Length: 268
Ligand code: ADP
Ligand code: MG
Image (cartoon, rainbow, N blue to C red):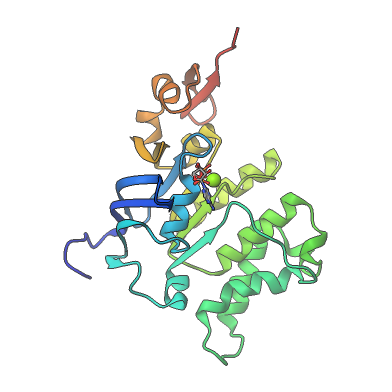
C-alpha cells in the first residue's frame, strides 16, 4: 500500500484529464474515489466522456495528466497480465472474431491467471462454467460467436469478463442489445457478484431506473465533469435529470423497489 491512498479505495483518480488530441479535452481534471465493494453507476448524455473514462481506468488510454490509483498503487505500475488479474472490462462494443466457439472465447478470460505454458486447471474450469451458467449461455457453448444474435453475443462477452474473476469490473453499457428480461437478469447478476463476491462494479448505464434500482452510488457526468454523485435515492431528482440531460421529467417512487423512477414529461 503506497502512501496517500486509503486502504479500502479500489480506485482513486487524482486530477485526471483525458484528451484524444491536444485541442479537445474530454475529461478535465477529474477527482474520484471509489471504495472496494461499491456498485457505481455512471450516467450522462451521449458523448460526455463515460467510455473515455472507463478506457483510461482500464489503461486502454493514457491520461494527458493526473494519476489513476488502483488498490492504492499507480495503475501504470503493473504488467498487462497483472492488471488483467485485478481489473476486467466489458467494452461498449466488441468485434466478434470469426470461427471461434463461445466456450473458447469465454475461456480466453482465464488467460491472465495462467502462466505461459500452464495447463488448464480445475479453477479455470469452474470459473468458465460459473460464468456460463450465470449468464445463461451454456446452451450456446459450441456455437460460433459470429452466428449469435446481438443479445446472445453480449451475454457471451459478459461471461468472458466474469470468468476473468477480477476484483474490479468495468461495464460499458452492459445491457445494450438485451431484451427486458435479460436486462433484469444481467442487473441482478451484477448485484449478486457485487454483494456475494465483493466485486467492485463500475457500470455505464443509460437506464436511470436500472441505475437507481441496483447501484449504491450514482455518478452523472456532463462535459467530462462530475455533476451529481451520491446514493440514487438522494441524488436522482427531477432537477438533477434536467441539469444532466436537459430533459424535463418527474421522479416518482418505484412501487416495486421504492427507489426513484424517472418519467419524462410530455413535450408539447
Ligand atoms: P460517451 O461514452 O459518454 O458517450 P465517449 O467517451 O465515447 O462518450 O466520447 C467522449 C467524446 O470523445 C465525444 O465527443 C467523442 O466524439 C470523442 N471521442 C470518442 N472516441 C474518440 C476517438 N477515438 N477519437 C477522437 N475522439 C473521440
Ligand atoms: Mg460510451
